[in-house]
Image (tube, rainbow, N blue to C red; front, side, top):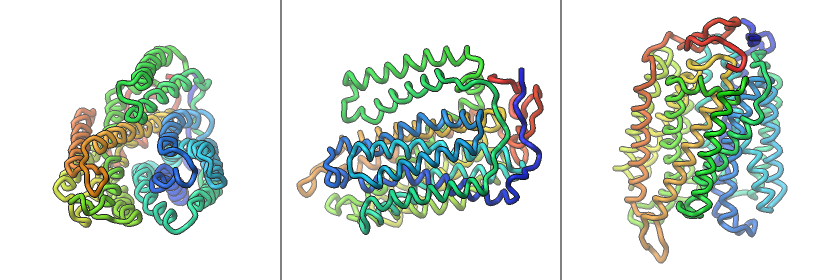
Length: 499
């Protein structure tokens, strides 16, 4: 079998790799901000565009769909044809989507623009892969921890920034700004980030990509629209059945093709499979914090628990959590280096669960709500830093982009299930107050208990991961410069084309 092309021992294209880490982390934050930037705008979209509330909700749904589809696909394309090249292309798509949203108030154009912005989520696994290929082993864990945490950091920053824009400027402004920042990102990447020469040989698995995309679209459409369509409606059930059927046929095909879109044999290893399951559960647990915090503090005081806070204040409640995510990413890297990423992930799940217990009992005081939300964000920072380290221990270097793309996808699926669960709980456990309907305090507390349960489930899954300790830098560095046919450091598996 032809061997993969190994990365050189030293990087000559980027004399200052520290700049590459900062640039890639900045790209991750910008892309994550794009995922949440329209949330404060959603209640106003029908009046601003003449669209129905159901159509307006697609501004969020479509980014979830395109992000889920393109993240693993572009991760695989990056492994095969160049990670920086695909990363730059993803940023260009983000800029194009931002411009479309900036120049139009037509709901169809806005949805198309948001679809393009969602596709740029692939920047995260691509950035992680570049860092793994280019940095010296002793710096990989800390850099990857920072890059992975940008998903939560951007979400925490996006809400208050978008709220400020909505309240003080024309709403198109935030799309012009996001487009301009995207252009800056492209320039910085081209100047500071080297192209990794590590490649996976073989042909791109077009049928595998189409099968995976079809299954994801069916599943996520059913999950995100089930509340509106009815969970037992023909459309919802039909899509879920279609997703199951497509996955079964896709799995059989992937096991037979020489160069699969997703190497199911590698993904089925406990070290990889359980990490993906934990990512789904952590994504669920984390997203509840973002979904309910702003809404809860905006509820009118007449509810007995609401604080009547403004849109900006409600968004700022998540900002301390974003700051903690930045501060804790290097701490998580040190924990992973000393004790192994399994310990980091278990600790993170415990912290997230503790944060929701705090939130359950402190739902009337703004500062205690912020404290509880910050504890959850802190646990998320440690978890998001540990997950890619666990993935990289279980896969060959040639599959880093695809494997981290799949892990990011699992987080997104967890967020989709969380969104559907939260919407169902808050819509069905309500009471009348001041002539309108609002969720009860018990509804919010039930969300906290469900999210804490997801964190506990993630902890249990983590305990079954193989290997409790790792060397100072895990086994991440052992994937650098792996000669043809040699066993990789994380698992005894020959490095082969399409294996």
